[in-house]
Length: 392
Image (tube, rainbow, N blue to C red; front, side):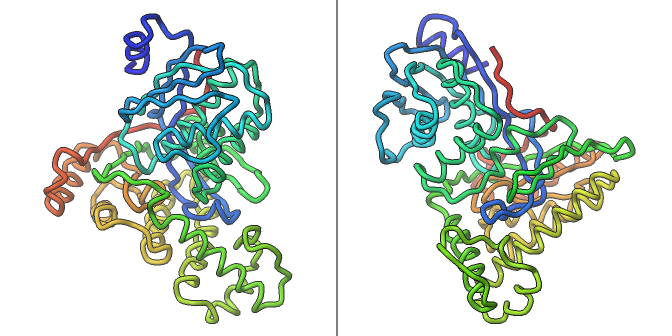
């Protein structure tokens, strides 16, 4: 493991502890968690590794193998404002955890991500991995809900990304060969096992070769547009409304949306249309998975991707091309952008019998359209996995 080897080279001894957090994919339910929708998800067998040890003086000294700059701060004097580098997610996590449980012990650590950055919730996986390490060294035992909420606060309050808790929930709750079906409004969730009669599948991840940052994309703008639509629908229909930041599309009955959607600006209407139809796709997808109909589940996943392009209006030219290629490739049950969808990657559920031909066709067609990304594009075959576990 690269993180262990680098730790040994840096600190001249074996790391006392290691841990792993899986990445996640969301086949149906994208762009809805921040407005209290429903989601589906899988953890996958690739993710973030950390090798670490304690620093009794309270200093945090951490290096990512994906970035050149090593970061340092103290558990009790973390910068109040983000510093503009990769470690801001971890500074935010330090503050969020310290507000709940006073921290005394710091750490020295090496972090390594197995796949390219973008679309698999690498930021959430890094945060969860880091929080688990800090908890281990400070004898803190978090519940799953506390872990999810602490990680979410780091992104929302410190980094400034208006995401919901889809990523964190998948990375904590998921179980190998099961589908996570979750209602973000009240935290209810179920883990649905793969039906014994379901056709076999693998997960393919196609990286566009373009990395992305949510804070520099239009992610927050899309969330604000959806929330604006909900706020306006409340006003049009006479529903009581309070603070804008506390308004969610989940507050709006479908019949209210249908009655007043013509009053909304086109962009706001599109965001709302995606949210309501995605809500319905999640419910239909959970039932398709339960009865073992992976073809229908895949069709809904493709439909989700289409709505993300035309209603949520996300997707770089590269990702849109990848999506289009996937829809025209034999053996792919379904797929869509993974993550925010501005850059990063696409995910697909594939028939293992077509694996070789799928990988060949997608690469050939994609690089034909974007020859400049030769050497940057990559494809990876993954499997479902259990959620985060501390590995000592």
